[in-house]
Amino acid sequence: MEKKILKVYDTITGKMVDVEVTPEVYREYMRTEWGIKNNNNSFYEHEIQFSALIGGNDDAYENFDEFIQDDDYEDDIINKIYLERLPGVMKQLSKDDRELIDLMFYKNMSEEQIAEMKGVTQQNISQKRQRILGRCYKLLKSE
Image 1 (tube, rainbow, N blue to C red):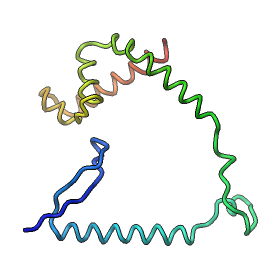
Image 2: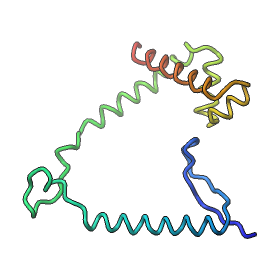
Image 3: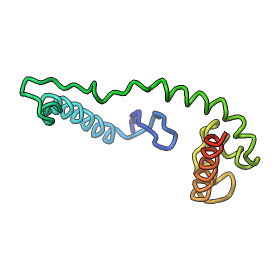
């Protein structure tokens, strides 16, 4: 039987992956993609302009300039400061916590993979992750 390859988004890893499917699945998936593209085009042709909803006249063009904030540079600076502090925060974590962070964020392992490797449940790994990230957040804010 002939197999087809689809490129789909893996929500666990956050990356696009190739998935081998039957020709029937491939055909239906591609039909759906075609419909989505047509629906999107139709939507944009018939969409209501936001400016008309907020009292603009019929000739008004949508203008979102008033919603754009120019403080992006502040976020960049804050993120840079946090990145500079991160090694110090990591040193304050236990060896097990650092290992979990390394497996998840540097080796891109899923919670399920780590749980299987450690012989615990995925929920246990998820709870540890939340606890560690919460502690890192507090440490970053306090320094």
